[in-house]
Length: 484
Image (cartoon, rainbow, N blue to C red; front, top):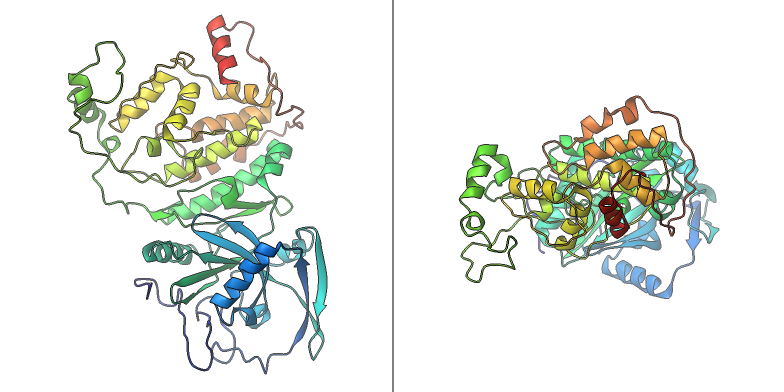
């Protein structure tokens, strides 16, 4: 990757000269020191840094040393502490910002509140030691996250992520881009470090009031993102770093994000009127060649139809139904479905709630909840046919209230849980046009008129039981057992 063209001026620039064979910071946003953006290490007073010295595995230590070797001079600006995340396209490191006090850090959106919580949320076990300098002035350690983007990512993907983060700067609850560095084909983005709790702990301990704070922060972030006509495409708990003490979170990882309408494909059938969709279905191969046995035994032997391609970015278990049905006109509503899955996980006390191996299994999981009738209607919206011969999948499906009771192993829901379930129904709507937007969700009664009737959850995730109403028919009871 020789260069990344088209990015806003100053989003990320690397200057390499004979005097300093390493990285130079950008001159936008965060970096506004004196001396025209150049920090003189001789003039800057040395300080005492109270930083964390965490126990690090030897393999992680070698990885961090490799990063320092790849980016000569990075150790003069950042002190790598630990590796805090690793994904398909990038690795994230926690690092101390050695030059924090020399710049205008307007990116620090949480200000002093985050600094006060920094020490309390340090990853145990940790040891603190002081690095003494000539003047001996004590300095509070400030941390950032260094995201090393793999060279396997295309230049367009890297440029897109940095551009979107640049455009979203200043949006509440969205992780801002501090700066970025590049040497040859290596790119590192510098992001704020935000202490947070593991979602695997949160979903077991959250009460409804905690869920309300969590979702309000997440929806606030998505409202800002969607106002810029940006689809995040990978909403999931690990991409929303939430601090329950601050009752704030930040949305991260825009590696799969895209601008609305960026897909250059023919419009999906869902963008047409209902009569157009009906005529397309009636003139389709399936309608003209119906299977003799009622259900087709597979694909036609000589299928002349062209393959259908659509963006299916995201994480399994959190993909919206229109993504599974290969809709080519996806909107910001795909992110809202993922928010609904998170709320369902919190209410149902099960993570992951959907655990499909592929898209086919994911549609079967949805059909177990919504029923075959609604799934067929949803598929027809996108010009697809949904069929299943699994006998345990009913035609009508189940209500969200009943599903939450079964999943959390309780007999009745509190008034606050019922209110949250009504929000869930608006988020997990098969028809994206009827699904709540982020702005509409924030105006839901769950946030505007909350019911403060909350009790701690006393169920056991390992237990299962029959909590259906006594007047349910025997067939529904059999379907219930099969679901659990």
